Length: 151
Image 1 (tube, rainbow, N blue to C red):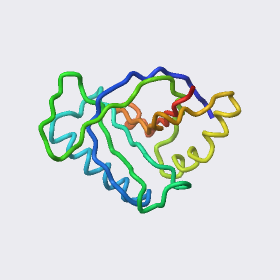
Image 2: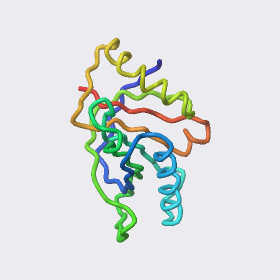
Image 3: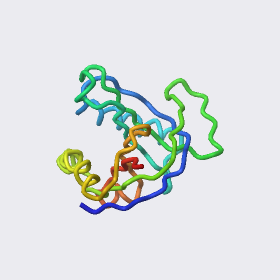
Image 4: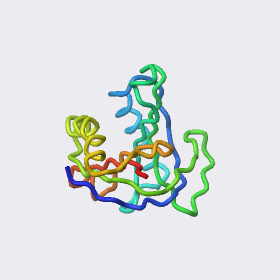
């Protein structure tokens, strides 16, 4: 599995949240969120969409797991809507894994990335979330990235 280390800057995000078992509901939320992004004219060739699984289902009951569909906001954006929440993501060093954008590849990556990090001598920084990152270029080429915060 190829890994690159990247310094991801801190950023402001708009997001919608789904609470419940991870799975099809996450995809449905992402589609709803992308409609909001497009209807607010925030989707362009530089847009970055993130999927953030906020909880580890090994430690949190499935019905309490939180999943956020997010957009990195432009610096000059002022949101005045009740449809989304606003927050910030702390930047830092991330191990970035580029994978095929299929449910099977994503699921397989989630089972392999932690061992791969350990094999490369990295340790997870659990003070920051793991990000599934989607850009127009990645999506057009059927890829996404899993960005794991490392110390």
